[in-house]
Length: 419
Image (cartoon, rainbow, N blue to C red; front, side, top):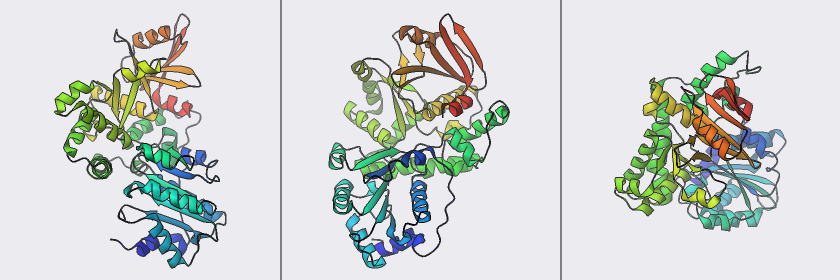
């Protein structure tokens, strides 16, 4: 087993030297500010490589700049330390740094905590023992609350926040690009949006354009590590090849309606096993499930669901064919808008995204090429909605259909204005 003391020394350079951090603003960090002073544990979840550790380092940097003692800040990464317990780290830290956690204020940052067995019980014990003195921040590359008992164990003690891949506005900030007023920079923004799609929102790919590097980074650095390392460890799946095949089916045809029984037969597994595998992929943030919109919640649950990959397949990402560009465009926008609903009626009228906020309803169609209004008008008529949107690759226009107004707007403009 790796040495805990060596780990502590390697993970905490601010104990012995000045800590320098290059940080680009993330929307989530601004949101976190109101929660950080509270005693509750902060949990950061999200895909691998979206920047959870960097957010932790930002908190360290801010704390030190505000006068917090640097040697009272403890960061630990559990990737190679799966057999230990949190109390082992605390004990070793107190000996190494000659500290007593009952006598001062401390910050404890625990990265990839899902690697530990029964981490939630360990964390509860530490929180209850030291909550007056320690601010705890944890991270996980899967949803940390996939098990019901986890929620029950930590009820009232924890706030969970999901860090999404970069938004377009964040991407422009990383590139240090001015985008206001939009009208002046429209041509440049359209080109940058195409570059942004290739990064898929991963911060480390912001300045990378080479197909080989992007493909290797996404395939080997993210997808294969989640499929062949994280999921087997977390869910104890023996035949991981079926899950890999299931993910391939979804990535090859983004936005497909899945009929559980038919697909289970195709994969030669039981209906329940397929349902479990879909949940595992969701909880690992590799796929996104959209529900067919209805005002009746029970109907929503019963209807067929659409599934999109959270990461566009590198096999189609660089395709120049308009058919694939359309698929890429739709999938990327669905992920950027963090969509939860689509709509489809028995007559096959369909709308790609239905956004719901403050009891309002916003239908959004995604059209890379040809524009049509049939589906969105059917939805607007049925649900008595006056305004709808069609996100295009470049076309911009306002269309009126009696009392109904449909705004056609380039996707990059919509994403920037949305924020």
